[in-house]
Image (cartoon, rainbow, N blue to C red; front, top):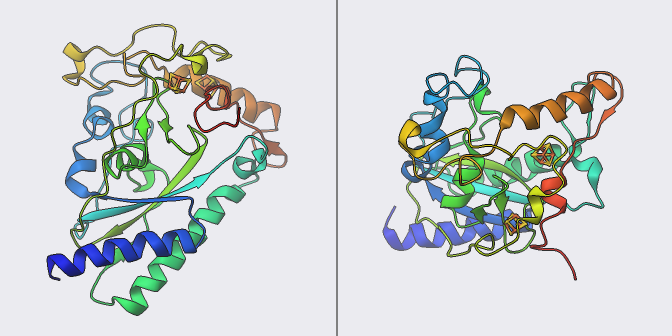
Amino acid sequence: MEPREKLSLGSIIIKKGREFGADLVGIASRDETENSPSSRLAPELPRIKVGLGDGKKDAGIETWPGMAKSIVVIGLSHPQEKPEMDWWSGKGSPPGNREMIKIVNALKAFLGENFPEVETFHPPYHVENGGIFLKDAALAAGIGTIGINNLLVTPQFGPRIRLRSLILDIQLPSTGPMNFDPCSGCKAYCLENCPRNAFSEIIYSPEETGLERLPGRKGNYSRLKCNEEMERALEESGNGQKTICKFCRRCEFDCPVGQDL
Ligand code: SF4
Ligand code: SF4
């Protein structure tokens, strides 16, 4: 495909993604996403002993399909007044995830019909099941930045956003990253009410990890402590088998970015 056609296809994908229901759509290259801090950190986790298991299931190491060259990242706003979007009930996917699956499948079908020369792959959500690090892909695609709360923070919806992706076998122009850093100079409202104090101590250092960008920026995000809160929510709801499981999200709700005054 000629460069001119690639630019046009990128724009068509973004327009169609929105038309199918996405709130935000961006495109990142595989190289940018594959070299992201999360991808590079995952294999190191057992060595630096942050207690995330054997580095396979818990830490998650990406397995990219050979055809992958670009990633279309789909963002769906998850406002506080629609908590049910990520409520798990039994083994089925939560409603928000189902909505995103529909959007990505519609985009995949559209590309199959109109651009049959472009091969597409809809990866699973979890990295340990063959997914990719979506926050890093979204950063590279210019959808937002990674905030002090270790979440993707978007100008439009703050950290209240959910992500999914579609992989393409064609290198399209990237739509990011964006020059946006609301956390610089912010009082970090997002960290004030964490019920597990998941940001209370430094766990990762640049020397040990070889990375400048660390979880929670300073290396103070403890996924283990946050997981404890998730486990509590699961236990409270009968392990998610029969009743609805409601997650915490304080670090999302307390961020003023994307909120009405
Ligand atoms: S509350 Fe402030 S520091 Fe926290 S994510 Fe939002 S902008 Fe960043
Ligand atoms: S989801 Fe809750 S427990 Fe986890 S880091 Fe955010 S505020 Fe803390």
